[in-house]
Length: 341
Image (cartoon, rainbow, N blue to C red; front, side, top):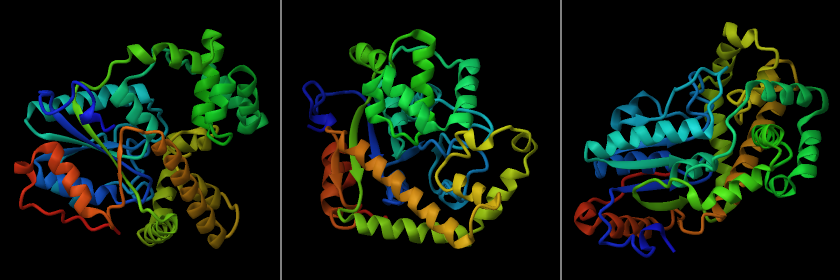
């Protein structure tokens, strides 16, 4: 059942409204979020783990200057690419941004595809141990020596539940799960289970929408087309500029950094290190982006209170869902103008 239809959250609910626009990469979220922000007096809160980093623009499909001029954006360019940014950091900063949007009487539009960020923002985080730089450094050193799949195997031995839902090639989540275990002696899955009932949920009435093409082949074609457009726009030059930054040149393992591990950036970095041909780099970048979309799809299928639409085929149904949520007076006579590409 959709969030706004749960008991106690119907039309008598006086909490401010927000829209959570979720979807896999290249599903058309940016165009829809911009259209809705203009039509419904909204501001966009990016829910994307790559967009928080300065310098990750072309390859992360960050809204450009023209798009940012159309609607106010939040949660962009918050950290240098050699810094880290946790889901807890995001939840704190995004809630501050949302408080400001609501205070201005505007509609928060939460748009992105990072599931952990959405979960931290909408549901709150379990009260597990904070990050420990020394423990993280030790885990990263082990990963360089043994590889992340080996550390995933270690995780499976101490926390089978967490290992079952974390991909063996997902360094950030493997690292965090092992870090929690080593600090506390308790599996991260136990922390998450125990705290599930006491999380601080976002105090808004949220319409959760998932947008994605019904045909996976359509999404795959969009991913390839967008990757080629990024290359034409100077993506490799962007990565060369990142590589020239003194802080990244001095880093002992830049590919372990969350920013550089972002899809596309890792493959570009390796290519500029001399690994493979330009054609092979393109194929690896597209394949990695498709794998990201698959992981996002798995997460989105678990969002049982979200409503799902193919924006190209179900624009009228999507419009009705927003109209029912915001009220027909807010949407009447204002058809969707977004174009999904």
